Image (cartoon, rainbow, N blue to C red; front, top):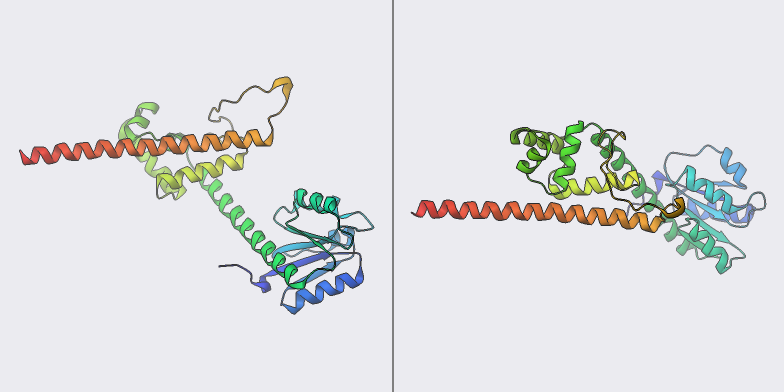
Length: 279
């Protein structure tokens, strides 16, 4: 179901053409959308912006500053505000630059009203989902940082597919102690299954950006083998994403393998028990 309650959203317009601003504002209001217009990036920066879900319609050829510097600034300061860019003198190069800068759509003037409204609806849906993800991630990190150092260690070992007995041996504690730590960890994270726990670990790693889960609030990290960059060059974003994806896949495989082994062992024990009963 598409989320698009116009009354809970606002569309900002930055265009130095009065006629264009008036037309856009009239179009937004005709479908019940709140619309606030500005004639320049400076006016937009000074205006008080709502905390509602929002998107921005930005004309490329602004006389004062230009749209692309404003686009870059908003990408840093308000990453959850999608930007739709348009121009009366559009070119392929201009559209490519806008999309590469993070714009969700690009329109040449004149545009079809329905096409623009559909793009705005998608932009607002995207902004809403982005806020939801941010809230979910903030809550997950809060839950994670409430874990004790030992519970964080148990979390990693569970994600690696280790059984309660193996975790106890790894940590040098009694099996019942390891099970208590595991139960408390799952309860604090509100994880109802191992796959759910693995997805949480993936999200925490992705938020960290280095493919690592910090055990003690940043003081000690789980070691991850990383090739030494040549000539102090940093690995590309693609390489970093590849390492993260590889780590996720490996951890999920280990977790599933561990679950399969434990299931097979349990089945064998049940089989032996049934045979003993038959005898």
